Image 1 (tube, helix red, strand yellow):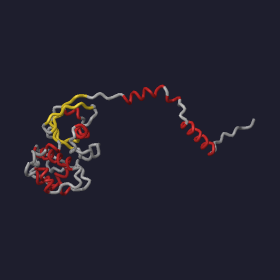
Image 2 (cartoon, helix red, strand yellow):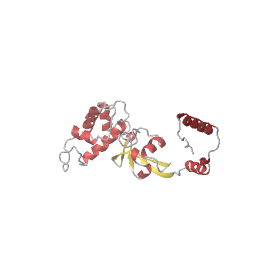
Image 3 (cartoon, one colour):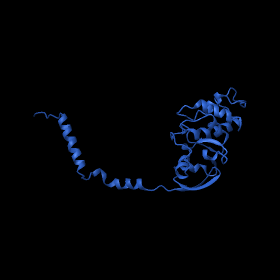
Image 4 (cartoon, one colour):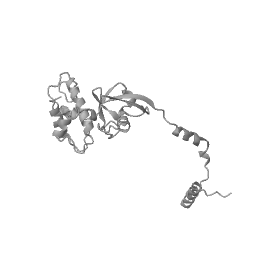
Length: 218
């Protein structure tokens, strides 16, 4: 009995591929796409229920109904029109979205809006007192602490929170004695404490100078 030759040639592979493409292009139903397809579509199109919440932002209460997965950053920008806080990396690595919650700085892209009912949230829009700039804002202007300006709102909010941490006696990795209250805010301390905020334009010397001057007034 002669042996059958089962060798697959390049020509056979190409012919088989062409036949498969023609079959798919013909629009004929594919058996694998019948029963489960409708159920999958229904799951995708089922609307997510929204939950009511009240957020206090810059001393004003805002009643919202949001998808529970909405981040604080997206609530600010997309639902309240407070676009000062920027979406940079959306992974908590650049600091452009920094806001103050109960006086402490956080990355708003990593925090759910629903977590912050009852909190006092301050964004870059809420730092000034009318036409009177916050001392950190004024110092950034005086020292040209920005170039493209995209990271600036996060830099300023972070600096305001950082100066409060200094006032409370929080040490940093640059502190010589972590048990002692820092007497002077050195450039090394500023750089270490602001290391979570990235400036892609590299305006760091001006930012450090601005914070050093602002520290004398706040």
